[in-house]
Image (cartoon, one colour):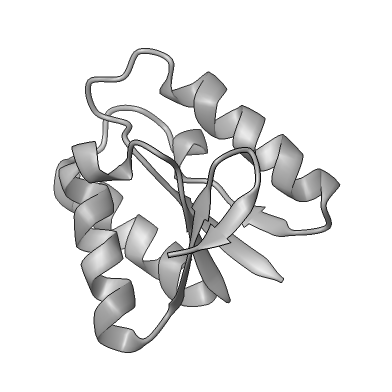
Length: 98
């Protein structure tokens, strides 16, 4: 199963480590992880949203990190999932359906 990771990036100095830890754990459980935290720095917000929406659409489900509600971009992703019927899961060290 392909999953896209969503959570707070902007304003979180530790976002790469946070996303990496979740990705490692999900991969250990057999998921293929699409991780937006590996995108290069220096793109515009519009560039990031275009790329991450493509990743979201390619995923079978979206896994939201606990801080996703603090992120404007992750909330856009959550709303898109609701609109298109994409499965949403909450990651708390384990996966729970939202």
